[in-house]
Each structure stands twice: as C-alpha cells, then as structure tokens.
Image: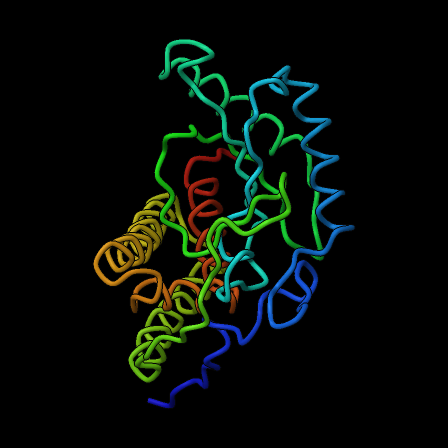
Length: 245
C-alpha cells in the first residue's frame, strides 16, 4: 500500500496563527485591530441579549490560542459569567446556550476564513486548554508552550489511507441508481462508519490527549475533504431511501 505524505505541521505549527498574533520581544501578542473587532462584536451581542452587565471576562481559547490551529479551527470566544448571580444554574446555562446557538447560526462572521463562535462559560468552570487569552484585558491567562509531540506518522498515514479508500468506494456506490433497500443499506453503513471515526477520535483524545492517533486521523480526513464526503453520503442516501417519486 502506497502511503500518503503527512506534514508534521498539519498537527503542530512553529508559531501562533500570524493573522491573530505578532511576535514582540520573543512574546506573542494579540493584534490590537483584531481584538477591537472581536470586542465590538461581543458588545453588540451582549446588548442584543441583555447580558452585558453579567460578563466578567472575554477569553480566547482553542487552537487559535495554541500551536495546533488548522484551516478548520474556529475562533472560540468564551464569555465568562457567574451563573449563580443570575438565577438557577441549570436554567441559566440552558438560556445562555440558547442565545449563543441562535447568534452563531444567524451570523457567519469569519476571521481570515475561520468561523467565529461565541459561548458562555461559568466563572467557576475549570479550563483545560493549554492556551488561554483574555481579550477583555489584552493579556495571557495561560501561555501555550511550544512542545511538539512525538507522532507516529506512518501509523496515522496507514489508518487515513484505509478510511479514505472505504469512503471513496462508498462515494462510487452512491453514484449508482440504487433501489430503496440498497440506499437504506448504504445509509446504515456510511452512518456507522462516520460514528466509528468520531468515536475513534473521542476515545483517542480521552486516553492520549489532543495528539492521539484517532484525533490526528480525523483531522487529516477532514483536511482532505473525506469527512465532508462521508457526511454527504449519509445525508443523500437517507434522502434517496425515503423519497417517493
């Protein structure tokens, strides 16, 4: 089996994202014009949702605040509030999550192609990210350390190739004129494969962390467009199976 070439920088970059960060005296600083734009968005959002007086901090987390960003990374902005001060914690969480969901699906704000996402977080909720930046105060809360992991690239390559070949075959089958039962079988199999890949990723992260093989395989499949193709097969085969001409 011929292996595909995977660049190490697919998983770990040598510097933080250059659109958001600049180097100053050996330290990474968030670009002020980008920070002001984000704060303006949050100000508009908090006025719309009447949450302005409750926001204690505005934090950037995720891979954009680390050396692990890809073109699929979201700009994850967390708004920290004290749920107990507002009301019953579970009800408050559901209400605020609903506000975020509505805003995130109503708007398609992008920063250099990266989707902008807003989330509420309780001030007492522990944060496990290795990079955390306060956009409100313009300062690091937790600086990410450049520490590239040891990755078995050949193992990642083998697993990516196997999944990619199966997805290609499912795509070929999906182009045929199938009857209802065959479309149902295709839907069942493709759905099971998607679930398997997602579970492989989740279990890998739980045991090995962000650089677990399952997560790296998922990232490469997503970068190559295979995940999107598989999701399309799942959706289209279902539509074909249950449509009536």
